[in-house]
Length: 99
DNA sequence: CTAATGACCATTA
DNA sequence: ATAATGGCCATTA
Image 1 (spheres, rainbow, N blue to C red):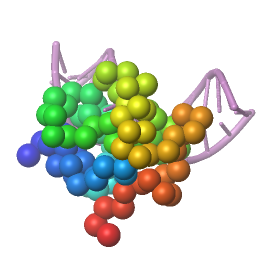
Image 2 (cartoon, rainbow, N blue to C red):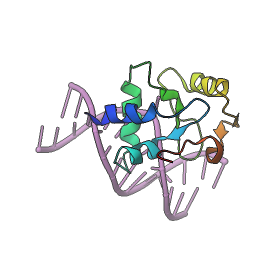
Image 3 (cartoon, chains in turn cyan, purple, green):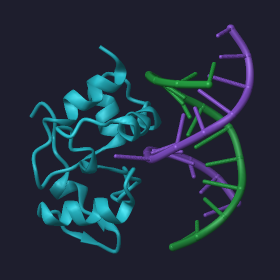
Image 4 (spheres, rainbow, N blue to C red):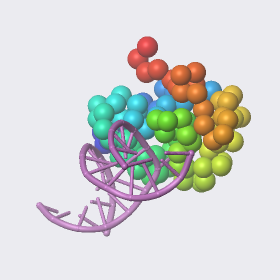
């Protein structure tokens, strides 16, 4: 199982209306400092089952998206995530793994 | 093996 | 608030 697949697998656990961060995701899959690599994994992802739009930056800003950051923002808003000034409250919308 | 790339992060100024 | 800097890691050529 590749690093990318682990990321996808973990990301699938994130429910609608919640988000996670690149750093968090990296931590979950066992590489606490692989935020960048996680981003790469998302970029290459082509599996539709993977909600790659639910991954944002640590400071609550949107981050990038293969189809455009704006698209990503709208998708999240549709799912119920409140985004103000291009940012969101991770304390409220951040999914906690292995609760 | 090395070098380059990137949807990042934290610190510092 | 922004900008620059160094680090960090997996993938790919």
